[in-house]
Figure: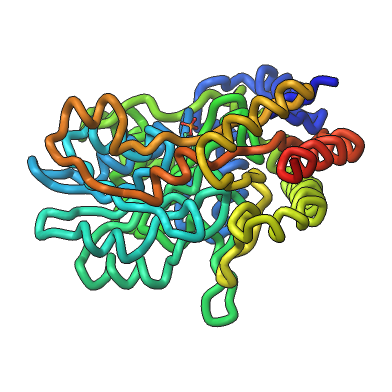
Length: 381
Ligand SMILES: *Cc1c(COP(=O)(O)O)cnc(C)c1O
């Protein structure tokens, strides 16, 4: 028995669409498949503008360029997140201020964000961990009151929603800017790939320029101007049509992929209910204002030793379970570069105690029942 942590899922249409892209005569970016993918996001989720990028990291770098910071400007970022959520802004010269997670959830805590706001704060970056919405009304209120840009790192949050006054808002639609990832480990994949969603119209024109190597090429191709040239900073952030073709095959099957993943998530949650009798904090919690997009299934062990033991026990039984983020305020880079030593105990707790179980579209019911049985066996020992 060997159960991997992740297996990429293919819908079967990917190679046919890539062949179509090859035959259509445009392989560079911003062609027909790119437009189809972008349209999908604009129509389905109401983003004012969607731009495909080569990764979520790139989309975050575009956000950092869009902010046009001054030396000393600060960005508030959760400590419990992937490196890119902070790195993209650090690279552009911003000063990073880390916020802590919630006691009950790895997501960032609104009051910890509020405590980090100073006169130099420019933006708040939130991460919807496991595709579960952060406390958006509270955080949006902070951003509005203090005139800060709100950026959603929605890398894990495709097709998930925030419920506000009885209405469902897609994650990625409430920030000024939002970023998504189509890395092989996410719900919808393109190998490597990402998306920048722009909801605040003031950023659209500049974002297209940054996307196209600092040129006004996008508006040239729309016939708005008669020649294009170098007008601003930028890079080559757009993926080729080969990537967009692959991605489009996935997007067409989004509903089916999501339904299957939700089924797998639910099976874990029901199958592991016994754990809540051992400790009510082991199973993941879903706040009332959040939907679940079944991005991952994690457990929060009681301490680091029991997590290490669980991972070893599962490994000995052929199951590959993994831990996740390491607090960024304890990273080698941060400790070398910054003098502050913030105390963020909740982020450290998830760093030490959180474990993710195998999760992929083709995970069979038999394999999943076996994983559930082994996890229960470990905790009941
Ligand atoms: C996966 C992920 C990223 C990075 O995405 P890439 O597409 O690999 O650049 C950034 N932030 C979060 C929260 C992620 O989960």
